[in-house]
Length: 344
Picture 1 (cartoon, one colour):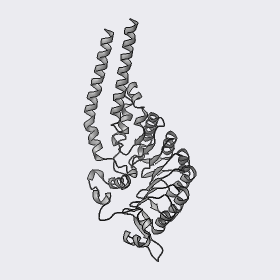
Picture 2 (tube, rainbow, N blue to C red):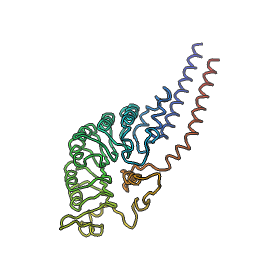
Picture 3 (cartoon, helix red, strand yellow):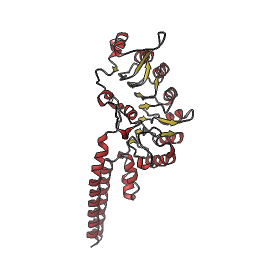
Picture 4 (cartoon, rainbow, N blue to C red):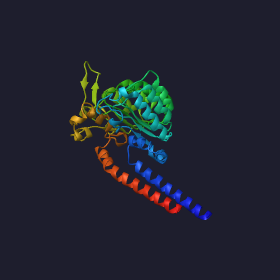
């Protein structure tokens, strides 16, 4: 009798482990919002949703408007649902249990002090962060956050923060920055370049595509950042302020001014070869007014800095859901049958 009970207990544990493993495999195919919702179904699902492998990367770029009743494709779309956003972030970060090394905010989220610091406190191992387009921060919040992100290696800076002040904070607390991107809406000035040569000496990759910059700023980073390998200047507005008035400089002029060793490091658009030229401007009505700006924020010719959500992901998830439902039903039925067998 004891042996039968022991055998039944082992079979039950094996069934539970199998269900847990299947759930984790399924959840790996879902986005963060779907996993967060799934965690509320029951205890076993909640346990599966806490597996560290699900939380190496928290990508909120595909955050659905159905969660917040706000329209997509408009900057600051979630500004008036700040409380819901904070609650959502707390739940997701609780599930992640500090295992996240990459955090991508939603382009349209209006990030607050509380939310920014909350994310930093719950992601101590973070190595890469992509900021949203807008935010409302008090002076000094950059330093508070960077102090918590001492392991940071890669960052996409947007107009949500002061580029100069965040560079100062990086200089104090983040010694391993090797990749950096300035998104559209920022300016890459000479003061930023000087700060980078001082505070990010290990920098290897820099993207300032579609950003206004100056010849002096380019000269500074190319000359003084010893480990620099690539600088993406696709569709950047490069200005020369050395002469009376402002002169726009193109790549042919840069070739004349810069030594070959510097030109080799530049990644630029030639004959429509960049992503922006190949993809064109998205004029789909449903993506207006700010969808095209999200594309610039998310795509990059340097693969490690790109995080644009692929259109195929949504359709793939839609096709996956009926399959997921069927699997869960079959696994649950099998488990119930085994329980009835052991009881009989």
